Length: 119
Image (cartoon, rainbow, N blue to C red):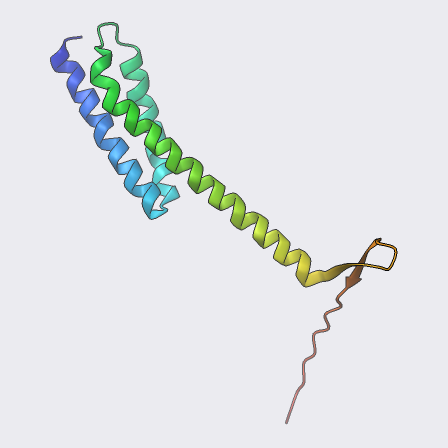
């Protein structure tokens, strides 16, 4: 494959990585998911080439690493939200305290749904 036919692959991957960054910054994880297969295809296509000049890939590598950092941060945020929601559900169902001997005890909160009908 000549350099003229390699450059369009590099340019397409470069544009895709910019689109992926925008989607990550905007929190559009659905769009990020849609871009994955196209990104994998382009990276595999470039990896299959023998006469690829690695210095042309430095900028792409930096963008891939930048996007990976953004993706890791997004996943960390999602995990934090899931943990917080779990904690809130646990608190709503009861309260954990310690007695005089330092043993944990749980006070369950009973919710009663009351419906009052007025005429």
